[in-house]
Every structure is written in C-alpha cells, then in structure tokens.
Length: 293
Image (cartoon, rainbow, N blue to C red; front, side):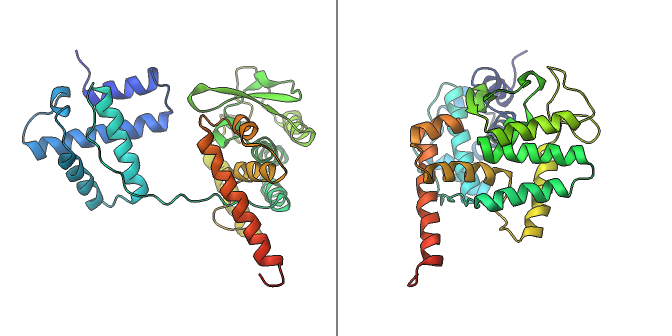
C-alpha cells in the first residue's frame, strides 16, 4: 500500500536527510496542511502531479490562510521553507515567492561571572546533592564546551573516562571534537562519582531524579527559576550559555572557522552572527562605561 504523501515525506526526511525529530514532525504537518488547503482551494484530490502545478498565487493564498490562523513572520518563513522541501520531494519545484522578512534576533550573551553564578544558583537549588552536581556539570558543558542542551543530554557512559577532548554528536548525526577544560571535566567526574544509577556504556550519562533519561525541560525550568532569583534577563536560557561561550571566545581572538568547528555549524553564515553579537556587546560596554556614553 502506497504511503500518503506527507507520511512518505516524513520517512524521507528522517531516513534520507537525517533531519531531527522536531523538523520531521513540523515539515510533515506543513505538508498535511498544504494538501488539506489545496483540496478546498482547488476543489478536488491533490496528488504529486497536481502539486507540480502549484502557482505563486496558490502559495500566497495558502500563506494568507495560515496568517489568518495567527502565524507570525518567523513561523511563516519556516512554513514556506517546508513547502519548498515538500514540493521538491515530489519531484516538482515550488514557484518563486519571497518569504516574509524576519528580523534576526542577535543572541544576548551573559558575562562569565553571570554564567557561573547561574550554574551555581541552579546547583544550589537542587533537591539532592547529586542532582545539584548533575546540573552544574550540564551547564558547564554548555558554557565551557559550547554544547547544545540536546547534545549534552545525549551523552552516554561510553564517553567515560573523560580525556582532554569529547566527541559530540550534533545535528544530523554529525560528530565533532571539543576540548574539555579541567573545570568542566572535574564537574562531570564529580557528578559521575555521586549519582546513584551507575554508568553503563549504553545508558544516558545524565539521569533524571528517578533514573531515566533527563528531560531538557527540567534543565530549562531550573534555569528560568535561577535567572529570576539572580535578576537576569528573560533571554537567559541554557542555549544562552552556548551563545556566551561563542561570544566570549570571539572576543578573546578566536577566528570564525575555528569557532564554526567548535559549535558544529554546517555553514559559516551561522557562525557569523556572533560577529554582530560581539559588536553589540562592545557597544553595551561603551555605553555603560564611557563618560560620554
């Protein structure tokens, strides 16, 4: 039995393109929405051959329909990207249509002192000492090694014993090697020594309170609570620690190519945003410190 187009598209994204679970789910949902809309818009069944006749007017009508449902600029741009990928999957080509302009939010790093204070606040508020050690280790991996929260939580016992570097599996299953500073390595080792669940090679390194894999939402919630206690901005999230890692390295003279490798960015353009971050940070320093700022 032939798979419905959105399901076949999802299979292709997961198996052939190795896209993340979140992306697969979101793009497949867009494909379903597009087909449902076109069935009403055209008044008939929609198959791959029909999709090849999609016009710019049809696509504008679909996006207008989605706008009526409350879609913002950033979400509309992602929707358009998903439509293009879906049409390409069917063997066609989406009509040229300029997407909505999306303002790029320059990441807001926090200072090294604030990064450490945030990690300390989270660790101190933990229900048990081993959980505090766990949270301290995770946040140091984000700030001290530039890991994404998902990358840290995907580590297993096979990374032990730790050395001077760590192999990390990032987006699209791409691996990279990152250096482990002594304080970061010591934090992870202290957690391993305290946690009660053991460190089997194929088991998650970071466990939840009941021993299962740790959910990223638990870490995000703890950071939200800590940032309020410290009076930090609402952009201070686990991912902001990774932004801070990148910004502080760039400010100390790291070149973009090296930073790209450390962060695991597929494209240098993704890394170049931190040049704007560094400039914005310098401007903030100027305004706050210069006598005529």
